[in-house]
Each structure stands twice: as structure tokens, then as C-alpha cells.
Figure 1 (cartoon, one colour):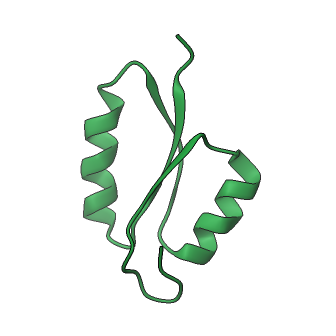
Figure 2 (cartoon, helix red, strand yellow):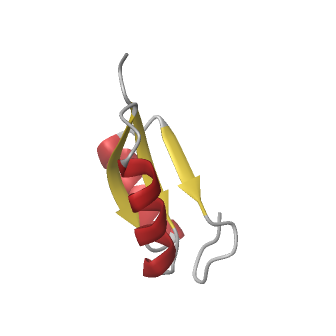
Figure 3 (cartoon, rainbow, N blue to C red):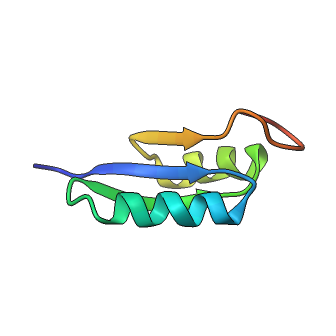
Length: 64
């Protein structure tokens, strides 16, 4: 099975680290990148073309 390419987006590093640990144990999920803001997420989506973006909906600057 082809892994799902996942982009993690949250302004809290500790949350991204926890999600990274959780999903890194899944063989069908590949974390292709991370972002700490909505603007950074838009850049990462354009660059990496992930299948799924797991994004916090309440972030400073530009939210999800």
C-alpha cells in the first residue's frame, strides 16, 4: 500500500512532536513536513503536495 503523505501544522512544537511520534509508528503514514503557521503551511503545501494536512484551527497570524 502506498503511504499517505502527511503535513503537520500547529504553532506549538510540543503538539507537533507528539503527533510526529504517534504517526511515525504507522507504516502507512509518511510525514513529509511540518509548519508552525498558516502562512508556512500554504508554502509547504505548494512545495510538498501532501495527501493530508493535519492542522490546528486556532493559530496566530493565519489560522486553519
